[in-house]
Amino acid sequence: MADDLGYGDLGCYGQTKIKTPHLDQLAVDGIRFTSAYAGAPVCAPARCVLLTGRHTGHGRVRGNLPSDRPRNPLAVALQPDDLTLAQVLKPAGYTSAAIGKWGLGNPGPEASGLPLRQGFDYFFGYVNQTHAHNSYPSFLWRNEEKVPLPNIVPDEGPLGTGVSSNMAVHSQDLFIAEALKFIRAERARPFFLYFALTLPHANDESEPLGLEIPSLGEYADRDWPEAAKRYAAMVTRIDTDVGRILALLDELHLADDTIVVFTSDNGPHHEGGNDPAFFTSAGPFRGLKRDLYEGGIREPMIVRWPGHAPAGRTDDTPWYFADVLPTFADLAGQPTPPSDGVSVRPLWEGRPQAALADRPLYWEFYEGGFHQAARRGPWKIVQPKAGAPFELYDLRTDPGETHNLAAAQPAVLASLEADLRASHADSPAWPVHPPK
Image 1 (tube, rainbow, N blue to C red):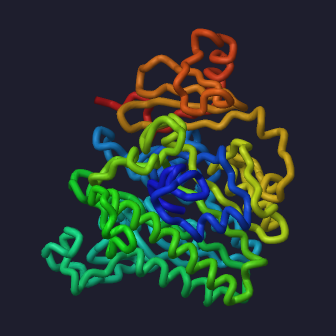
Image 2 (cartoon, rainbow, N blue to C red; image 1 turned 135 degrees about the vertical axis):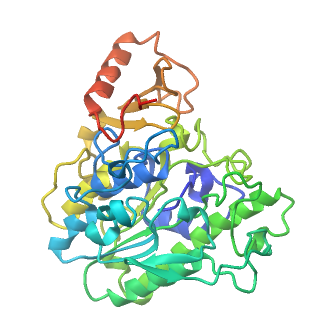
């Protein structure tokens, strides 16, 4: 799972400037879903939806804890009664690893949310999502122990990273090494690898060039803005490391027995000097990260399952992160715990799943005030910001959400407003109207 990668950032989703050959081949070998959605338009709640199957109207972690909200451990950490995908897979004999960015619990009062306390057998990476904004950190975590790194010299590196070039250790170099090591170690038994990259997230949202990457590679000589070259290099680095994982599966003769799923946690960003319009990163859609329009939540989603998922297929059936846990439970032969999703195994096997056409997909978002969105069939309701009127779009004819049909379709609007009310459950950690 990439971090802030847009729907349009991959060649197989229409990108023409950035090279992503391994992911493009993954789409050729599997199913490319074109109406798959993240669980939220920012990282922490999206990851919570993915790992618990609870959408943001019911989940524990519903936002990135904006600065105007009092710090409450319940708001930013999974609790002992939360059930994760790793816990669901454990009775089936799976060894589970989380490598990369976690963001669902910290040491101290929030320790219950740490990966090893949520069913994972191994963790390496960033526990805290803010810490993950630095690709050259002075430490990472292995399980629940700090691993010191030599990124401590306050010098200007070759790309303005603020670290010395002769000492710099980029976190992605460590993550891919750990991922490959885990696969090799677990090759003889069932394993689940949750590989949560931090690319192409900006490392300092206010820094004009806050996109940290060791090399610009083939983009170094392009006549592009510096930030664009960095962003492209970050996306291609994702592709390169996906290629390394796929090559290892081939080497170990595991490819035919391994399901590979690729996606992103939310839409593209405009931070660290990045201009998402330069690459049309949101594809044909309106909105970016932090938006409940399609550009903020519709994601690339590729599933390769040799012998089951028809190669080269494109599927426009809407589904989202809440469906991942029920699907994996189904695949592992485990009971599906209560969740807001359903198993989409039939879709992954290339079979129609008519029931998905008439169920609501739901999102709520707290940064800048509470607002909501839902999709049922082709219809999408959006409250773009707190207190704003609801907007209604027909995604069949208007995927870019440019023609608001709220006034012209009052019955459809009323039905989707009912979906919004039914999908939200109050949480003391995430009040709709936070105290002043």
